[in-house]
Image (cartoon, rainbow, N blue to C red; front, top):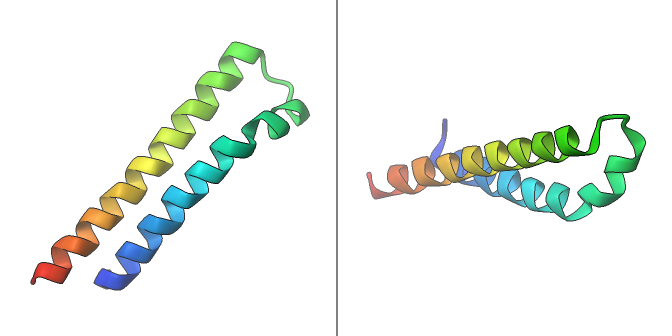
Length: 66
């Protein structure tokens, strides 16, 4: 990928993870999961997206050095 595309994708994923975490209390009402399973799933998805975003940012910064 292009270095700027990697940085942009990383920033979008991190911001998306933050926004989903911020508004997740409102979205949890519409799905019929048990409370503990739903909280675990939300947390796992948020961490996964945030770490993928950090990976893209690190790859983009690494490409900037070259």
